Image 1 (cartoon, rainbow, N blue to C red):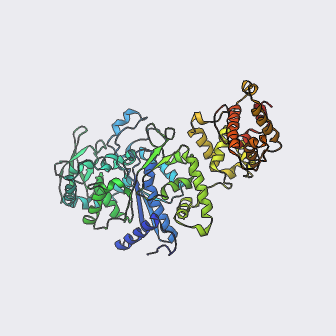
Image 2: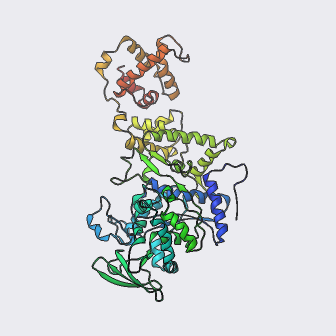
Image 3: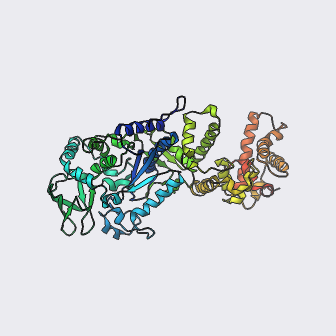
Length: 574
């Protein structure tokens, strides 16, 4: 199976991880394709920190597909996890469902058949928008259909060995496992997978039988508020008591499927059963006693399966996201980000960095610079002679082996130009289209500017602070015009004289910067002197005041072309 990257080709972290996944698959001798895995609990919105958990194995799987290696990206829904708490904005009466499987909790918004399905849907839409091919499985379906029954019995038979492994770390830990507290592969992922591990503390619980790796759901109330009181290894009968109503119940692990393994046993069981070859995890799992490090030991000693290839990845932080959050106090989601970022750019944020590198996503002015970098990289990627690790990251971000190239505009207009024009035109797509056509980007329809145009409009509307927005004057400032100096009048006269015919951006740029030169008897193409530079500064300040009543704003040539000659003449008192 071993298919490596040809010599001379650039290598990155994806290349190396793909090589590791192949080596692991060959070591196991397991049938079927190489398996790259990710998992998320559909307990809430999946934010951009969680997205790294999914995108890391996606990029590795896509690399293997490019090499022609049979591979699947297995995404596990931990929908058999407990409903842990009622989030902000949900009727407090939903507290009655705490402890029940997410798959059994109704959708409070009434649009899906369960809580878990409600939060799976936007994730599936994100997968599609990012061009990812994913095979999904439901833990609720796996457990309830008996698929994992033999593995549950194996874990129970080896419960003393599992407990011994856990005991090694119980004496070492000075604080809680980050995963036990946050329930994800990164510390800030508290809402997305906390349910997966909220019960990990039961690893050390005193039950009627000591440590027990299986947690039954109560057959009376459906909650996991149970304590095992007895277990018969010969009959596999398990008895428990539920703290809700003091219900006493019995289940049989060989014939019934009424619960699940606790997290630190469930994860290694899944690796072995699904033949996982590669699965990354947050850097918090490098700590002794974490669910990941414990799982690595258990998968080999209990399930006789080599620990999957992996690497730790850094946290993703957020800046300027007050408007980005889809729920009060929450972090931005991928769907939020895709309102302002093209799919390829969102993918690029993750693939261009080393996995261990933490980074922040900023939806303020950083977005403009991000688009500029992306466009420059696209131009570089078009030159085969310049192919390197940077262009390899662009290739991975801009297309996938199965979906092909991700959506990009037919006519690529700089994002800063689109957003500036959107600001001046109050977000009229038709007017923006008309104006950028006069600025050196001819096109036949608005659709040729998509998907970037809509994102520029959304970013300008949602993320440019009101104080930085451009408000064009509705009437001339008669008082300011009356008080103009002779020098200022000359500047305006020279500008208005040059506003003839159709306004082209290059010509208007030359004119706006050249007016102070003309006033000093210099040609437009002459290099400005220090005096001219000082005049330019004052001239620009004057134009901003008379046109938009501000000290600064969008680039003046863009503003003038957007307003049109007639409106500029009227506002300047011609």
